[in-house]
Length: 261
Ligand code: NAD
Image (cartoon, rainbow, N blue to C red; front, side, top):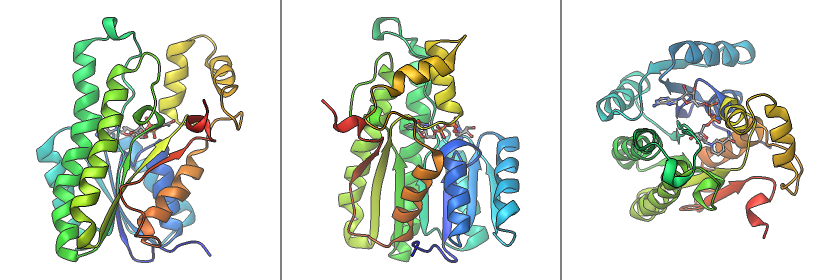
C-alpha cells in the first residue's frame, strides 16, 4: 500500500517545475493539501493545472516568493498557516545550479547567488517552519541536497558548497528537533531529468546536450538518468510520517552512482 498523505498539509518550494512539481503531483495523489512556492508565477499555475488534471479535489495554494529573501519566506510560511492552519510536511527544495567553471574562474557574484538560494533559502525555510511544527509536536521536513552534497562534482564549487551545507544543516536540525516529534532528512539526487539538468548538460555541450547526457550516464551503474517521479515517491514517503525514525539521513537517489569507487 502507498503511504498516505490524506488531508496532510504539504508545503513545497520550487513547486513550479522539476522535482518540486513532481513531488506536488505525487503528494496530491496521496491525498495532501498543497501550498506551492516558486519565484515563477507561470510555473506555479502550470503545476496547479497538472495537479488538478488528475486530482480534481486537491486544495492548492500558490505563493510567489523568492526563497533567498527571509521576509518572503516568513510570508509564505504565514500565508500557508493562515490558509490551512498547519504544516505537516515541508519539501524545502528550491535551488539552482549556477554557472559551471573552475574554482579559480568561478564568478563571485554567481557564488553568492547560489549560496543565497540553495543554502540560505533552505535555512530560512527550516527556521520559520520548525516553530510551527514544534507547536504541533509533529512534522516532517525533507531538504534537497544532491550527490553534489556528498561527493565532488567538477566545476561546481558553489553548488557543492551549498549542497554540502544543506546536508550539514539537515543533520543539525534533525538532532535538535527529534524529541519534538519532528524528522528532518535530506535527499541527495543524482542527475534527474529536469530543466535544471537539461541546462547543466547544455553548459557542457550547447550544441548537443543529449550526447553530453549519454556520455554522463555511462558512469552510472544504472546507465540512465533518474526520473522526477522516482524522487517524488521517496519525498512523499518521507513526508508521510510512515517511518519517522528515519531522521538526519542524507538519502542518495542516484542509481548507485555515489556508492561507486
Ligand atoms: P528546476 O530548475 O527544474 O526547478 C526548480 C524550481 O525552483 C523552478 O520552478 C524555479 O523557478 C524555482 N526556483 C529557483 N530559484 C528560486 C527561488 N530563489 N525562490 C523560489 N523558487 C525558485 O530544478 P530541479 O531539477 O527540479 O531542482 C530542484 C532541486 O533539486 C534543486 O535544489 C536542485 O539543486 C536539486 N537537485 C536536482 C537534481 C537534478 O538532477 N534535477 C539533482 C540534485 C539536486
